[in-house]
Length: 328
Ligand code: ACO
Image (cartoon, rainbow, N blue to C red):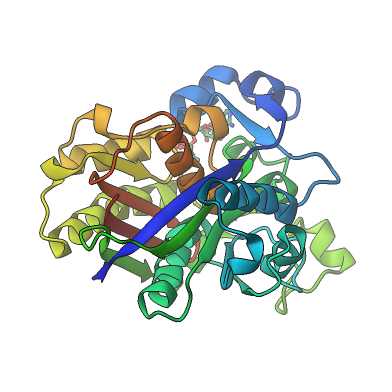
């Protein structure tokens, strides 16, 4: 469908500070074992107080540009997908544009929570495919630690910070690119995962701070049920649209929220675990950054070679979901 689009290079940036499950025992009533057995998470990274989402995004973007030997001023468009922007405006993408010196790029943020990177990848690919842009940077970047409520053990143990970037451009080879994609939303389920405060509905006030509205709120069981249903379902639909079978997958890169959710998708697809990329143990759920960081690590680990069939799939607040099948 979007043939001839290539991920020219990738980059990532993870904050230095490693926060183990054991450390979280100091903040909330939890245990190392509860967290690892229910989620597969062993540790995550947290930024320092003076680091922001655009700081992580800029380092990841610079790495992707360096690897592709593309100069910042050659980039036409920057999309930052994030639910933890530096501030409501200007967009984090504009801050990144300045930090990396991409003076000729237009820049905007795209918010689809944990599905954000997949939404951004498809939007960016359309601009390259149409010939409107030569080089597009799509960056998934999050500082989830800044919106976690350390009085809520059911959410604060699940998330981490990080950024992953992809530079998109045209492929010389017509067999490469995005074969199919599936993006969806169910706004009727917006209540089950949200941060209510700080927008036009509940602008910051003493009341919103007192009610802890500036933190992530989640009905974990409802999100779990949704994720288990949609992760496998969306991947199967995209494969079918691409005319491919699950047994043709070379590597599945799922959103890294919870090992048990990934397990269910793997079972639905009926594929072997050696075809699934996992790093949830090291980083937890980095929302929009999870998939691009995983893609970058899979490449570094030599798990992807030219011509491989990849399936990327994710879900998140909105509720939203997304998947795509691409030939590397
Ligand atoms: N430590 C110890 N106990 C805990 C913790 C904790 N950190 N958190 C919850 N518990 C307790 C609960 O209070 C409950 O106790 P009770 O039985 O006495 O009431 C018990 O553990 C079981 O709680 P459940 O919620 O049933 O636990 P479950 O096995 O369902 O796991 C979890 C919870 C991990 C949150 C799971 O529901 C989940 O992963 N949901 C999906 C979350 C997700 O992926 N969110 C990301 C969405 S992407 C985005 O856009 C941000």
